[in-house]
Image 1 (cartoon, rainbow, N blue to C red):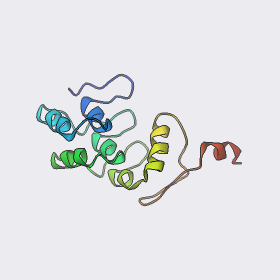
Image 2 (image 1 turned 135 degrees about the vertical axis):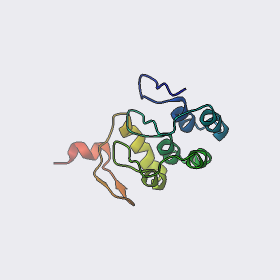
Image 3 (image 1 turned 180 degrees about the vertical axis):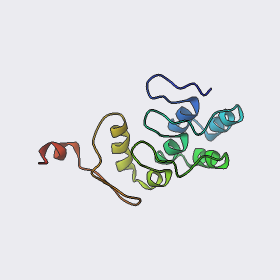
Length: 124
């Protein structure tokens, strides 16, 4: 159950929190069977990071009630609070980066700004 995949180092709980067609009862069942909610994927994201970034609030509530840590940042320095505040357009860019795309320009607790890939190539 806590054995990660070979590509993204994600467990079944990570995947349950990342697929929109999967209900929060799946996360609950995995936790009851002993899924570790503190394991991180290849990008330092715990299942709660993924649920918050994809706005899967039912999963987020399940994980929070189970004791998921909220202050642990991922490899990019993003906490759950930062990811939950990002508009979906920035989340798409963030997810693309996690799979090998654009780089961060500025990040704070309330702001997440990045240059589009086309502008990065033109920047001095």
